[in-house]
Length: 383
Length: 225
Image 1 (tube, chains in turn green, blue):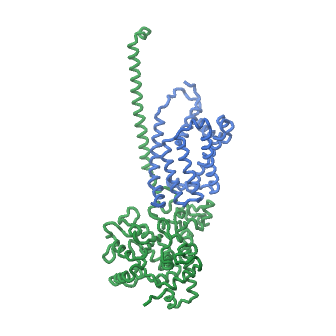
Image 2 (tube, one colour):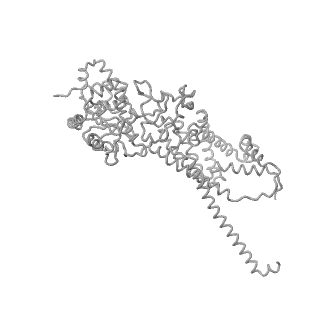
Image 3 (spheres, chains in turn green, cyan):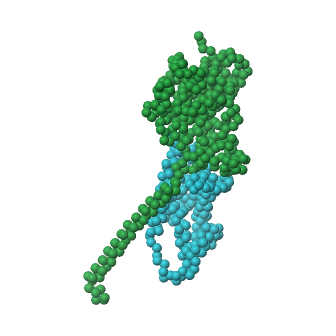
């Protein structure tokens, strides 16, 4: 039996054509399709409008099954996606694109759930998308995170073997996140550090912005490939600019107007939060554009500095409320005193050596002079 | 290796090591200078050494720089004096009143203060950079200076200029990605901190010692032995 296309599926559920076209427009806009070169991947130039590209894909393509694995995580990324601001999109992903296996969201449990996953992996071998949330752990062969008696490393390798693409969602899955924070007891790493033979895309964030995760999945669905990425494998349509670039407080930054504390006049007036530790200038994410809760707000808008949660090692990058320019490792009073002591001791020791040398030289000189005086008969006479 | 990691390295271990060398190195240098020996002062002082010191600082920092033409050094080489003066003034303002720098002081000492408005800082940092370039050209073309300039002088110029230019580009968000230019700025700052105790830039600290000693001598009223 031929698989139903997504469009047929949606029509069956009562979505009107008008709503379908609206949805396509939303998806295309959100994915920034107009600016993304991979449109050509469909074998077309930019002839049709982006909505048409999306519509055509949804009309002709069957659902993409998704297997969603969770390792060392808090399930925050799943929470975010299940409460995502755009119900149309999350519905589309959760119900219509089909998440076949998701430990937190699926109704099945225990052996039943594991069986469902195995069947899905067999049935869609080479076709499904593997989404990983949470960091894999390397220490002691991955025994610090096990599901159904299997270590996370085995689970990841097993699931990645048949995946068409791997999407790491959240900072933990991308760069190790909080589990990888110093001293990283479980040796948590990013998914891309382990999976080298499959295309991997990173959607970092704490949690990842749900629209970015769904947008990336849709990108794969519609264009058949993962979006173009930056050095850290983050999709450029979403991670092409810093939070600082599109910040609504940016004019205050340029004018040099900063909030000095969370409750001062500057904070009430909406001044820049740079002095309160904002990491916006070095943080690449779509927060300022897509925002959260149906575009309601995002941290900086709500009065909290950016923590830099989409960057590697953000947990170890100095204090959250310490200015970004401040050194990560500080010289405290005792170590400064020790250093001054070392310097002073070294200086004094060398000066002491020099003094000894000098006094010896003086003695030698005197000796020489007196000897010279003793041996010179002329000088005796005069004396 | 990506730039985020390089930034973490230069903000963390690199800067830390640079600060260690800076503090220990300067203490060492200071002790070496102090232990070179003092001449015994046998003559009874009838004036006030403290007043001499105060007058010396006031004259050196607040009076003479603003009426430079009374000095012979100025009349002999106006360019060096003006460019050098503007360079020191700009560097001081940017280091002490730049918002990003205030955050550094705050993290080190536990307290901060208000910065200057960004456009004013931008103006002064540009003035500082231009002064540095003028001084370099002067040094490269002046026949006598050319002969006096040895290798360490070029290093001095470079290690001061690099943090200035990278800092300016970073603060104005020009050309580079922020984390790239931020890393370059911190690497150049670390280079400066490591070099300072061993080069003549240590005058930023020792100047005040010599100014004090000279002031005390000037304030002394006694028969010179």
